[in-house]
Length: 323
Ligand code: ASP
Image (tube, rainbow, N blue to C red; front, side, top):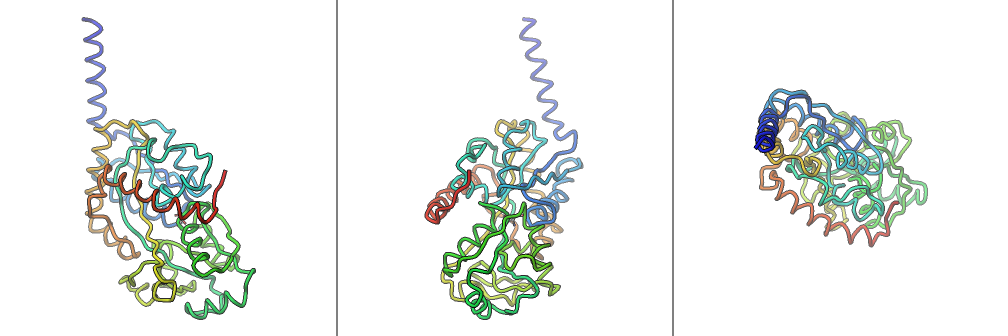
């Protein structure tokens, strides 16, 4: 009887703790450096999440490296109490095909909390690059065979994936230069240390608008409506038929995080995704905030499974892997 009462009391305490979640700051791990596009989405989302998550502070922890797998590993192994979350992108579904010794299982080690946005990429160049449009860029690439380098955020990152497709469709070999995120890669591109990069519009829009970098095309199949990007052609219309790369961002918690907590986070996420300020900020950077069923964990998980099946064979055919 005493045992039963004790068990009952423990259950009540746990339920009360869940009802109060969050009662301390929540950390969102971003698996790339500060100042990059994933970081930007996380900081904007943190602002929009704060109120629906009871006004608690949300801390961004940048854990860049190995194409996002280091940050994802940190969250997979963190306490499953709802105080450590992961904001990742398409790398969630490309890493399994690339990393032979990944320290987590994408579909087994996380609770899926829902998708945030979809973001196209842009093909950009250093300011001193003589080409000013895509046709001139192809001539420049031809004239500089074997000398061109292309920045990315490591194997499995969005920039790596986009660069891989760009090299295979143009049949131009480039030297890839990995960073811990495209925030620092952008600094080097601005400084002329690297020649080209593919990056999410959430990182490139303000640089393009300010005329600080060369912009050649967008990776979506349709042109974008965001004013600074509207004049850019698609790679598809520029001759790379069918070229289409769209990056998505989503939120995860370590496996076993109580359902009462994941439900609370998902409900807060849905409120944040309807926040007019958040929507305005995202749209101003070329992103589309999610409104479909993938804002729910189970639907997002099904989507990730489909993405793994879509990208796996492409990556394997390209002969890419890391230990
Ligand atoms: N844009 C990066 C990527 O290529 C990641 C980042 O720094 O947000 O995946």
